[in-house]
Length: 287
Image (cartoon, rainbow, N blue to C red):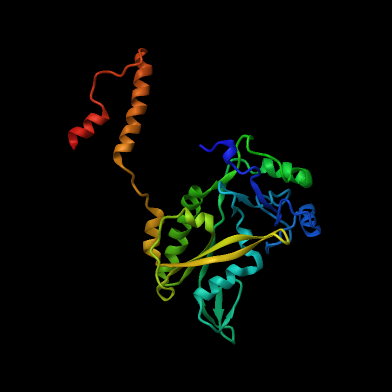
């Protein structure tokens, strides 16, 4: 378990599109009006709810790196559409925002799917958010490390509960149709995924658009920047992401034996386990 001193002092990286220590007129206006600068379907932020949204775009992970927690954050200047389109379609043809390619007379030529995967957070993000927006200038440097339910990126849940089901359901359909798929993630999340076999772009069925939030110190603003594109085939990648890697059975046996010893010791009242064969003995006999 992480100790308080190992956590980022302040979990929030960006609120309503700006670093929390950015007090420019634009940043103040976005906080005051609860605006989203990243091409949301409406001008305002709608994260979690329309009224009084929790406008956290990104949080710091254990390495003090901002990781994206809102999928709308990936829409900055629509770079993801440009990058996905370059994978889906050859040069020429008109590209619309829905990622279809059509000719000069409007006939559909091709299409592809772009999935955006932000990172879930564990803990409570609303508490530090409310504290911050109550007085941004005062609370930008607030030390939140000793509060209960400190929020942090939950990469494992993001891959198991969101990314894997999307690949199975949507990706499976597109693969059957022989259509390509792109997935936009940030570098921190991508680093937690299983190692994938890369292929040449021409052989790829799936493109991973891996982004960083690069901090421009002069303007105190973070910008979505494509760090790299990883090309893979669909089925081998799906197998990697959806199948658990088994650890050593002995480690699990030792864990179970420890728990069993604790329960039996408490039940006997004398702190000793009975003189019976243990799981360890059974495993050794089998071997």
